[in-house]
Image 1 (cartoon, rainbow over the protein chains, first blue to last red):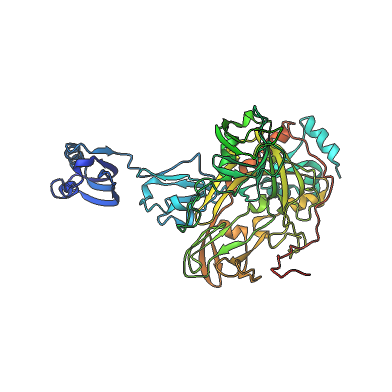
Image 2 (image 1 turned 60 degrees about the vertical axis):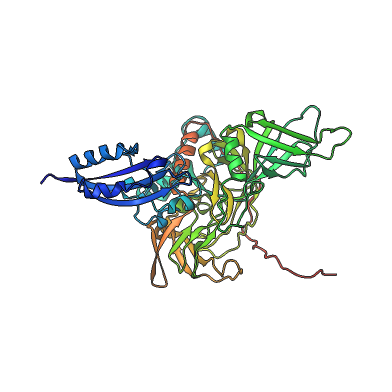
Length: 139
Length: 396
C-alpha cells in the first residue's frame, strides 16, 4: 500500500455547484479522509470550504481533477486565515485565545509572536482579539 | 561621576558607550557596577503599547475664503476645534461618526482617532470636513477637502499621559467574558493580561525620576520628542519595593514630538473589541549613566518588578482597592501565572519585541551621534497621590 499524505486545501465553489455532494464523492470514490475546518455558503450562494484531505498522492490528484470538473477553484495554500507579519506588533494578546497554539510566542527571550499555519483550525478567535487587525479571513 | 555635557561630548564625537536596558544587566553582572558605571554613558529604555491619552494638534493653514472651524472631522472622526481658526486637536480614543459603539455588544471599533493618526503618519490622503457659523473675517461656513500630513503646517503629537511606570495584571472573576482596555478577559480567571515592557520600560529603569524629567529628550515613534510635563495621574507616592520599584501604576510622562518625522510602524491604530479605539505607540527614553546609583537602577530585571493582579469584573469598575496578589514580569512573560493555586494563561497588550527593537534603534542613533541627551529642567514629583473623583451635591 502506498503511503498517505495530508494536504490542507481551500476550495471555492461557484454559485451553481453548492448543492452538489462533492465532498461525499471524495470519501466514497477516492478513499480520502476529510477533515473540514470551516465551510460557508455566502448569500450569493457561493461556497468556501477549508479542509484537510488524507490519502495517497494519486488519489488526491484524481479527486482534485474530479472537483475541478465542477469549476471549483482549488487553493493548495489552504489559507482561510491569514496573519500579516507586517501588521502584527507582537503584543501577544492573541496567544491565550488561540486554541491550538498556531499563534504562539516563538521565543520567550524576545517575546516575538509567530503563526504556524499548519496548526490553525480556523476558529477565527484571533480576528476578534487582535487589536491591530493583523489576522484576517478569506471568507 | 559624569555630567550631561560630558556624555553629550562623547556622543558628538561618536565615542559614547551605549547599551539597552536588557544588555546592561549581563554586562554589569560581568564587569561589576563600578567599572561599568565609569565605562557606560547611556542605557536605552523603551516601550510599545496602547497609550490612550495620546493625540495631536494639527494646523491646516487657511482656505480661500477663510474659515474659523467650529466643528470638524478628519475621516469622519470628530476633532476638537475650541482653539484658533484652523487649529484642531485629534484624540486617539475618538470614535468615528456613526460608530455604533457597544450598541451591538461587543462593538468592533474598527476605525477611530488612533487609526487617523496612524494614517496621517503613513502619509495617506485624508478627508477634512469642517463647519462654521461664519464671521466677518472668516466668512466660509462649510468646507470639504483632502490633505496629507505634508500639506499641514504642523502636526505635533501632544500626549498628556504615556509610559505608565507599571500596571495592573487584569483578570476576570465573573462568569461572563469581559471586553476591556486590557483586552479580552475570559470568565473565572481563565486568562490574565498585562501591559508593560518590564525591565525595558523607561520609568522602571529610573524609578525615582532622577534623570527623566520635564525637558528630557525622548524617541517618540522615531521622531525626537520631549517630556513636556508630568503625565496626568502621575502619582509618585506609591508602594515600592526595597529597590524603590513601584508595585503599581505610579509615574507617567506627558510627551510631545513632531509627527512629520515619525515612523508609521511605531504609530498604530488600536481596535479593542467591546472597549473602543486607541493608539499603539513606541517610545524610547535614554538614561544617562551619571553615576553608579543610576546605573544600578537600570539593571532592574523582570523578576524584580512586581505587578498587582486586579479583578476587572467588579473590583476595578467599583474602585475597590482590592488586589488579588502580586506577580512579577519574569513569571508573566513565561506565559502562565498562579493565582490562589490556579494556573492562569497570560497574554499581553504591550509588545516586548517592539520595545527591544526601539531600545536598539535608539542606542544606534546615540552611537552614531544623532541623538543628544537633554538635561531635565524640572524633576517629576516623587510625592503626590492620585485623587479620586467624588460625586457630590454642590458645596454651597
